[in-house]
Length: 315
Image 1 (cartoon, rainbow, N blue to C red):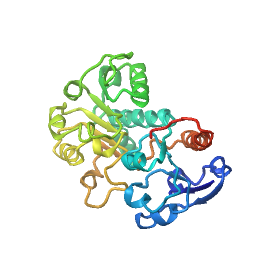
Image 2: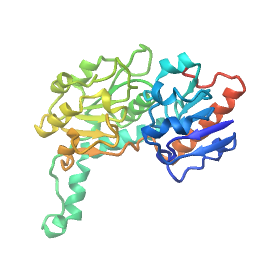
Image 3: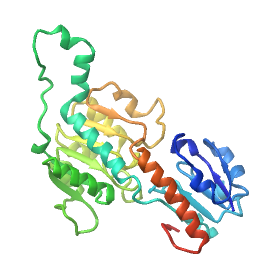
């Protein structure tokens, strides 16, 4: 079979792709600009992609494509309607990054709650050594065990975050569609109004786009910390930036953006230097162990497809 990997650089240059490459003739590209997608998939049977958008325009001239493998759990960059129309199978990789994303979500919250950036700067700038006091206790921080953590999205990642938050002593509220689960349920408005920490772990869909809206942000506590490691478009990015600039939010941690990388005119460029902001380059999914699992699962998906099995099939 002919396999093409369109954006291998997004998987990390330290990751061994041999589990995929061993399955057939494989062409690999560090990245693929939109204007070259059609050419590079033209003869392929299997397309492996992480961030590249695949739709009628890019796949229309690729009659041999039988399978698309997304190197992710989310697949909002794939036109599923076109895949159904053309009979192209689509597989994702569920669950591979649960621990990795949960770890970043917790780390961001702990850093912002503890004002770690400010305290570190005090020492690294020389301010601490130049002072005559053995300690510095401003800005004031509070124990996380005194807080309510609201989890918006109760899938695998949200559940793991909730478990860790509970272990840290937080009162935990979870907004999820399924009624069963180990944590008290609350709707998104209740979480926005009551939680001290609000972390978002939702797939992007028509129903979740913009769910953290300007109106809901305005309902949040002035001290609330918002963490988004899901998808940029589930939140109103300008409204979040405005709330930080106006002192209406306690902190903001974000790893995902509507445009990646975000451009110079993005609202977040205006809050880059704020101490209560932690922005990271969509790395939450990418612990070495998570990426290794992802590659192994993609290889399994391809192998299973050619054996006629239904493994991690979306379409």
